[in-house]
Image (cartoon, rainbow, N blue to C red; front, side, top):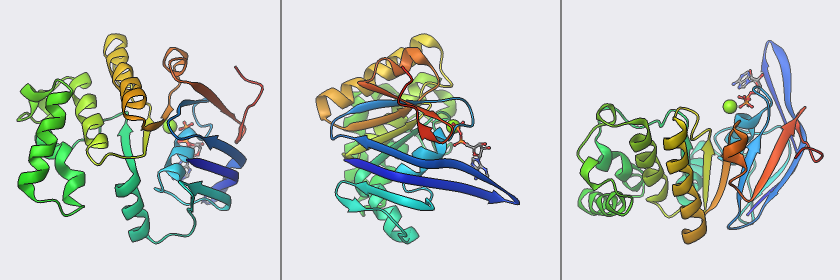
Length: 223
Ligand code: ADP
Ligand code: MG
C-alpha cells in the first residue's frame, strides 16, 4: 500500500534543517502501524508526506501502486479525497458546523448532493453511537466525542488509508482507549490501513507494528 524509499526532507527557513535522511518504510494493505520517536524527530513531517500534504526532496513514494511525486495541488487534493482520511490531535472540526455537517464535508468535494451526504453522515454517526450528537457543534462535545466525529469524517469516503497524528494526544486515558478501540475496529473490520503517530508506548503497542524514527531514519534496533 505504502512504499517509501530513501526519502529526504529538508526545511529551509534560513538555516536548512535536514529532517528525513533517506527513510525507507513499507506498510502493507490492511496493516495498522504506529510511528514513534522523540519530539522533533520528524513524525509529523513523515505523516504529511504520506498524506500528500507536503513534498519530499529526494527518493520515491509509491501509494497503492502510484508514484507520488511532483503532483499539482489539484492532483494531490483529488488523491487525498479518494484514498485517505485524516485524524489530528486537535480534531480539526469546523466550529460553526454541527457533527453531521462536519462528517459530510468530504462528500461535498465529491459532488454528492446535500441530502445524500447528510443521510450518509447521519448513518455513520449512528453506527458509531453518536446519533444524539448529530446536531451539536464541536464546542458542545467532549474531546472523545469530537475525536469520534473526526474519525467518522475520515471514514465517510471509505478510504484505503487513515493517517492519524497523535489522535489520543489531547485525551485522558479512558477516552484515549475508546478512540483506540474504534481505530482498531475500523482496521480489523473494515480492512482500512492505519498509520498512527503517537509518543505513548501504551497506544503504540496496541497496533500490529511499531516503527521508531531516530536521526531521520527508521531505527531498526528499537523495540
Ligand atoms: P515531530 O512530529 O516528530 O515532533 P516534526 O516532523 O513536526 O516532528 O518536526 C521535525 C523538525 O522539523 C522539528 O525540528 C521542527 O521544528 C521542524 N519543522 C517542522 N515543520 C517545519 C516547517 N514547516 N518549517 C521549518 N521547520 C519545520
Ligand atoms: Mg508531530
